[in-house]
Amino acid sequence: MPHRGTVSVNDIRTAIRELTARANLARKEGRPEDAAEIEQRIDSYRERLAERP
Image 1 (cartoon, one colour):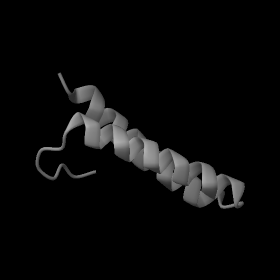
Image 2 (tube, helix red, strand yellow):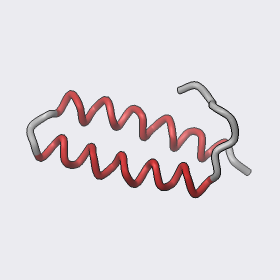
Image 3 (cartoon, one colour):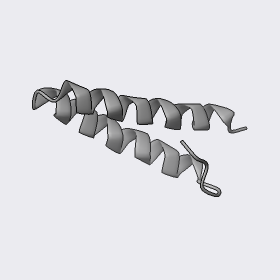
Image 4 (cartoon, helix red, strand yellow):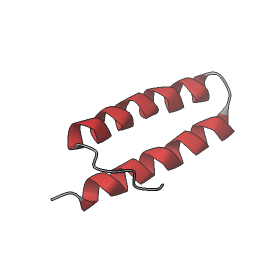
């Protein structure tokens, strides 16, 4: 994921929360490929969060 400027920790956490909800919905709707793609984005956000002081 390209870094696009400064993003606050709260913004990253909010994105993780929203994407997690979308991944769960995709799984419930029988869209495992979409859920997997969303999970990759979540992992990217978690990595960004881990880089923060």
